[in-house]
Length: 534
Image (cartoon, rainbow, N blue to C red; front, side):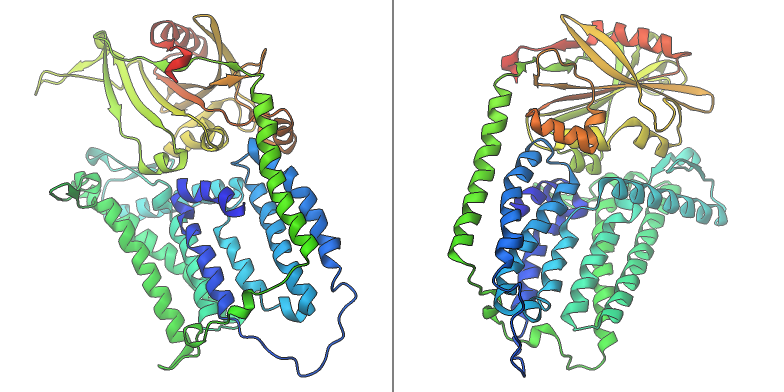
């Protein structure tokens, strides 16, 4: 159950892709534990033989409740730690009953090592990533200026004049390498039998190594851009039959990861000294470590609790969903001759994090406002006049579409591009704008940003496929606090799929004008398909 819950993040977020390997590393560390025979007979403690009742039964009773809450909140990272705590406790109970503290203290590190596969709390994760993005981009700009290259910083976007802009995204922030370095250093510390103080120093050295290599990688890619070779970063260098060689950007990421691993490996090995090291690889496998015999009653209750968790959760949500109203699919149409449109590339990081079924990012402008390219007589979008940009993503089901509501909001993403948020004031709720499309009312969140005296107005909505009678489609912003998540589970509001639509209009004078143009756009370009189209 724990691996099933965590695999959603392992699969959709490259930062935690190492999670699939961690359970096997935990088993390896457990197998290398050598049993020790106590020199003296130790009297069993009072709790031995009773922990399955004192700790095990409460875990069994709470497990179905946790699984029901998880059904409506698969993206809630607090549940990952709660579920791990239950699994950790249930794992140690039989070992404690057999040998007390002496038995379980050697198991603690191999079992606690699993924590490196659990995603960090979302707020901490986002804040740390953004902090690294800001620091890395600032350092690169300083280095480029020292080398007498034109460079300026707009949020985390580096402007290098005629050569365009350089975005320091999540991968270039160094957070992925930092995560990997912690996993590797902790494992090598155990593999080479370091003491805790030596392991701590190795972890700190690994963090420094990861940050250093990432900064070198980010600067190298930026320097290539400054030298006018930016087209090489995202293009495949060459192809052979149907196989394409990775782009320079992706290849640099692989090289960085390999260098971090090799450097930490050499550092850990040299720290021990000598050619014949006392390490886990030289120890025989001790399969007896994994052997335990919980009471039959406890085993039956545990199996019953697991089956009850799955069965009742599915029954609870199916019963609630049978009362929901089916809604048609919302779609955006931009194919007509009155506008000039350009499709924008969606980065691999966004695609991996959102894990949508389909998505498009498109920019368009009325043909009369565009400018003519004298070289090929084509029409191009004029960034100095009014234009629209949209991002549309759809999910059929799964936890990712609820995760996107809490992690990818305009107020957390756009300031990183150098925009200043005007409305709402950071920390306050956005204005809700009702827009009528056909027979349906769609509630949009409204945001206002500015840069260089130009304004950008952003409107976003999430249109679900199933909805409670009388409920609006407002973003469940309050639903991401503790009370809101529990309420969602009680009401059976499991993720049922839907469409997220973000619309941005630039170069208009006021929010009233922007809202009016949003309604006009909705009348012209937003439509609902039949329910069968889903």
